[in-house]
Image 1 (cartoon, rainbow, N blue to C red):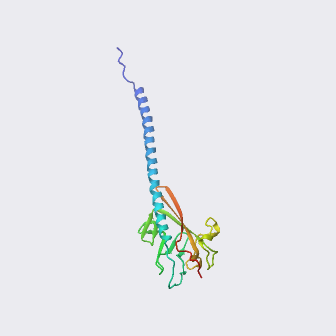
Image 2: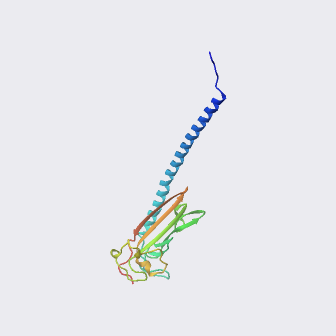
Image 3: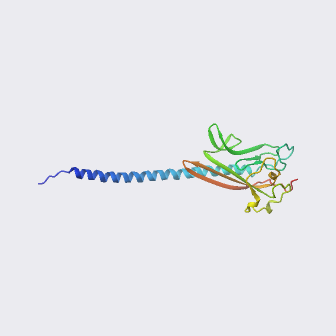
Length: 203
């Protein structure tokens, strides 16, 4: 009876084959794990960006027209006090109370804020606004909303300075927010029609 044992060469070949198989399995498991991490991060970032835009849009569309005692830097019958490319200040009451939306760093936390104290979106974020006017820049007599072609770039501008009469002619505001987390960027935009602006005739 031949009772031959296992040779060193056979053991080395077996170890080598198991090492290749083990490496392949571990690589597949890690690939699936990282893919799952990415997939779970995308909905969270996307959801937070949409929630931020929705929160801003809900307040913007209800902005009040400034009336009563107008002070320097304000425009009568305007829903917007200052319209920047990356910040927006709207009236929340006819007496002049405002809400400011911008990207700030407060107590070490960077994100999109309302009035510098209410965090709407944390992390590396960008906030962009553009404005649709119902009349040519510099006009003090504004057309009705129905005369505006929101698809025409000639009606849009990227910013309107505080005190400009153009503020009273804003009918639409486009809000865009993007955020990056764990190397994944999500962006969302919406265009909001101001419920109270423009007033039919402004002088």
